[in-house]
Picture 1 (cartoon, helix red, strand yellow):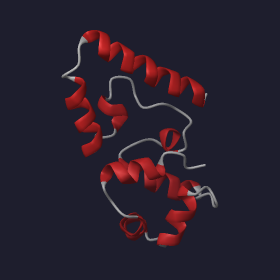
Picture 2 (cartoon, helix red, strand yellow):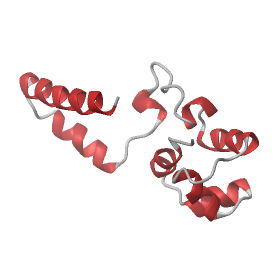
Picture 3 (spheres, rainbow, N blue to C red):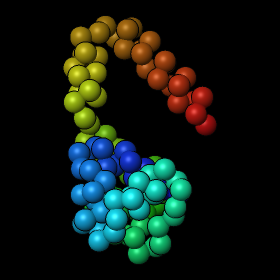
Length: 110
């Protein structure tokens, strides 16, 4: 149910334990939320959304990030920044080829 929790946590660079301490729950609860083995109550969902600066809808995967939010509301990690740096060295044609590959992967997920 909490589809974007792990991604948000990794993007923020915090451990399950840090999230748990902030919310006053156990690390095991955070693990279970991430593995979709247990669903948090609405108060916990709201606290998680506040902690990560997002909405409950985004947290549970119901809505995409706000239009115009850079990086979908998430800061890029080091590997993503490295990809961006590498992309800048490509020609327009090469960039378009990479874009098509990404679009095909994403289309396969739907």
